[in-house]
Image 1 (cartoon, rainbow, N blue to C red):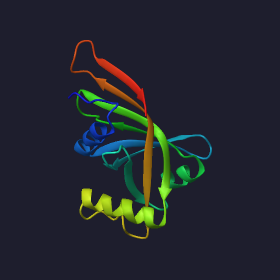
Image 2 (cartoon, one colour):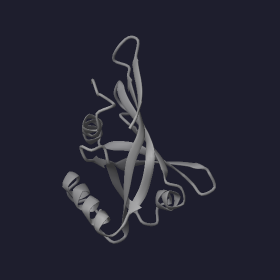
Image 3 (cartoon, helix red, strand yellow):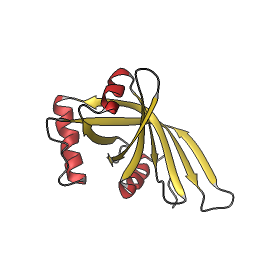
Image 4 (cartoon, rainbow, N blue to C red):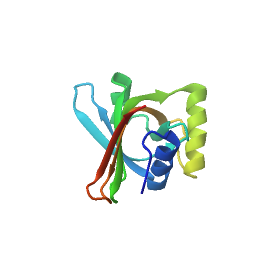
Amino acid sequence: MDIDPQNPAAVAAFARQERLVVVSTVSPAGDPEAALVDIAADDEGTFFFTARSTARKIANLRANPKAAMVIGTTGEVSLQLEGRAYVAEGEEKAYFAAAHVAHYPGSRAEHEDFAMVVIRPTWVRHYDASTKPPVVVEVSW
């Protein structure tokens, strides 16, 4: 699958197609923590997911806003993204929660016990092993 890593809409479309992504955060002690989440994305390249407010990843992001994602773990094409993440609050949480529910009907994103995480990537790596040699493209956003 040919994905232009410089095109946020194309990256977001790939994420929506894949649905599940691995998201990594950093604990307050500096330890890595990874989780599999249902990701949603808009065409501007903003990614968002929900998690219980008591989840480790929420505490991690409140202490350190760095996050990384791996999208595409079963095929020959994958994306790695790194950037800033935060827990949305107030009207912004309501906006992203409604968008998450639109992506995943039945999602608990709007429930008060769940937080909404927003990730804005600053770096993208596209890896395509369907060609010989594999194509690797890294770009900053």
